[in-house]
Image (tube, rainbow, N blue to C red; front, side):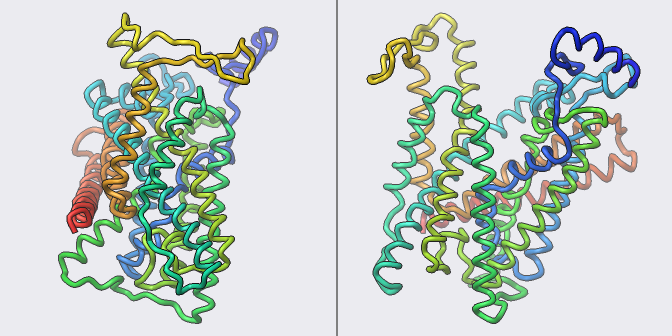
Length: 472
């Protein structure tokens, strides 16, 4: 391989930049870029719910549940990293195998059309749900900023009401409609960088405040059993919601192959990915445990559903404002990163379905005032209608069900088993030729079955929570 590669690079040197075996420009990613990408993909708004989750599960159950989810995430990422290259009949050289650039490519290659359809359904459902969750989160953060300023200027006993989030949700929706029409907004590399920096900033502020408050209290609050509930049934539902929230905070399987596609080889991409996974999951788990445990230690059973807006903290008010502003900035861009995938899918589907429709395919040049005449915006009616309706529907659902923890729980639970466990296990079995009833197969199926039970339990509990709050 090395000798072949050497001669190959000499031929190419004359022709221009180095190319990889699939004709793409040579990939340059290494262990550290891999680690950075995974951290960016994992740490997001989910971290804000973790103190609440630990409070529902108590001092033993909380950390144990976190470690279990970390293990599941690591294992599923490990299985999936083997599916980046699919086996081809002719050779044993793993470097010459066909690459799968995305999660859906891998499912299509290994498991066929039907399950690709299933995978797509869950993926788009998850993207759509995340857009709703981001709308809810942004509204609570904006309200928190207003309340912090009000308490600061008028004293902590002032009636800085819990006024409705409706206005803030509508504002966020309006902003997203505008952002939806910026061409290639989601392709801008700075967006990921900003998102990563913001998530780290607000998570670290949450951690710091929890730590400071614990020290100030001079005692560690909380109990082994967690928050007491009036009936055992309610406690069971609460535990289910907490598990759903932790499930929301961990898996990054959906973007794993995209990250792997940035890595250079040799060494084989799956090897770099394995190390990257291990470091990233360890780092994330350490960070998550710190944030959630200090949050629980600081507030005990009163731990807020969203660490930075539940207001156990009043001062320093500017720091609270800054942390919440970071969340808002992160989610403004994050909403687009998720939703643009749906927009692209919709554009393609409509164009394929209605090739002759002017409504779908014709773009109108719109002159923008104050801009040179040569630059005009390409307005497409189908896009205007679809994107506006999409943003309106996510905003509408957020207004209907503005329950941060329960909605995160539903989302985390919906995708946890199908996307983070079932499909990676099935693909690994195909890729590695694992035969039914062998030891590996039985172990993997048992793992899948346990995760299915946990995911279903979390889903039912979170849905129950949403419905009870809606009716209550």
